[in-house]
Image: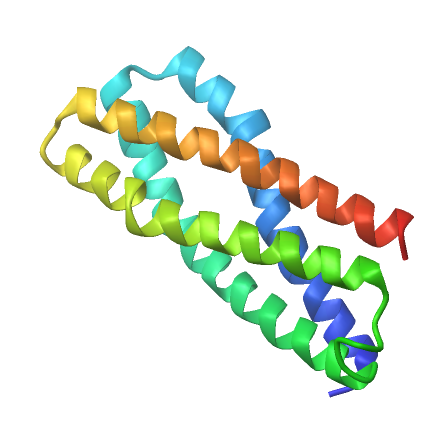
Length: 150
């Protein structure tokens, strides 16, 4: 794999993940809250996450593989700039947050939607929303790091 292909895949994966969070949080969330009643809103989010989260898992895998490959090509962790260490640290935090969202509140949201438990579903959706806001912010910081500190 060439460095330019690895960098392209790395950037594409970050666009899919961070862009998807931006769209969901900034565009879809307010409209869904305005036009859909809670049962439909919860179903919309549960089904949207069911389509988006496999893409995030793929993005995470691509980011890890290409990131580590590029670090290796640059001579290892001791040879890369501080911005790479910052990016890696932020990326690990983002991945941990995503894994938590996927394995805890998202599973609870799906169960609540299946049981038509609006209160529990709303609670889990609010929890997911707060973690998406954190990860979106971290993703934007990550983009700033690569452009401003590189």
